[in-house]
Each structure stands twice: as structure tokens, then as C-alpha cells.
Length: 164
Image (cartoon, rainbow, N blue to C red; front, side, top):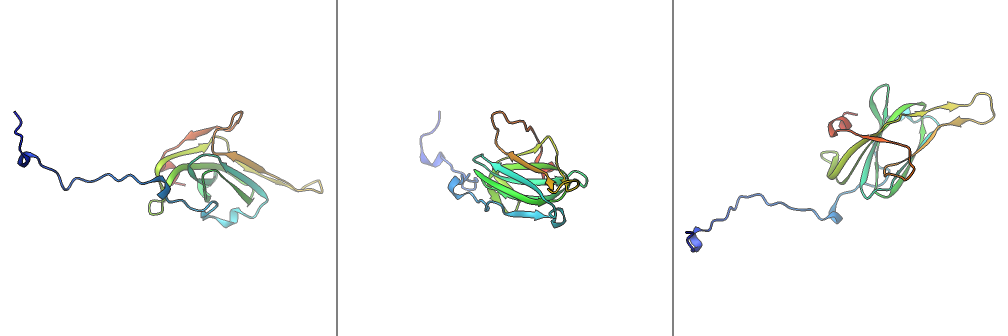
């Protein structure tokens, strides 16, 4: 038998309350905001177009395959395009982190965060020998799946992404 009196009902006043943030209050940086850059990797003619056709913001990291370090880390807003130019010759991997609600203290997204890397390397080359025109590498990627697209990605951990 459960007594039916008010005194037997207790509430826990110290219980943490869960607050759900309204998506319109999510923090987002401006498209193309450079978070880090090693300038000596940007003295070439190479070009990279990053098309983020998702509803999530992204952090893209261009990682030198020789040093295994990020040479360029940039913010790409949801449903936006970013063009990177003057990339020097070299071989790179492109990692990206999709998510919402940027946390500047953690340097990560608070909501819907996921990490991936393109399977294939991006090899930037310049050839100005033997012709009146200089040939150089250009790449274009989408962070969202594309029908008929050939680029594949692999998931990576937050720890691996943060190590570059």
C-alpha cells in the first residue's frame, strides 16, 4: 500500500537538467575561415574545389602524406563551395569532419559530428616543360554522396582526425 499524502513525495533538487539547444542557436563560422595554414605549401598553381552539399558544416584538412601533418585546415559551411588555390606540388590526403554547433574551446562540433577521409590521394603537379602553356593539377570534391560519383571515403576516429 502506498500512502497517499504529500509528505511522502520527494523531489531531487540537485538533479542535472538536460538542456537541448535550438538549432538556430548553433554556432557556425564563416565559409572559408582558415583555422591553420602552412604558407610554404601555397606557392604553386594547384587548385582544389570543395563542395559541401550537406546540411552540416565541415572542417576540411589537407594533410601532406610525407609529414602526416595538416598543411591547411578550413571551415566549409553547409551548402557552400570553397575554392583553394596556389597549392604547391605534393601528395595530400583530404580529411573532413561534418557536424553542427562549432565549439571553439574544443575545436570540434558539438552535434552530429562524424569524421572521414577520401581513400585516394590528391597529387598536385605542375608541368611547364615543352609547351607554351603550364599544366597544373585541379581537383573537385563533394562532401555529400553524388549519383555516379567515384570518390570513396573511409570513416576515421576523432582522435585520428585531431592528430593531423
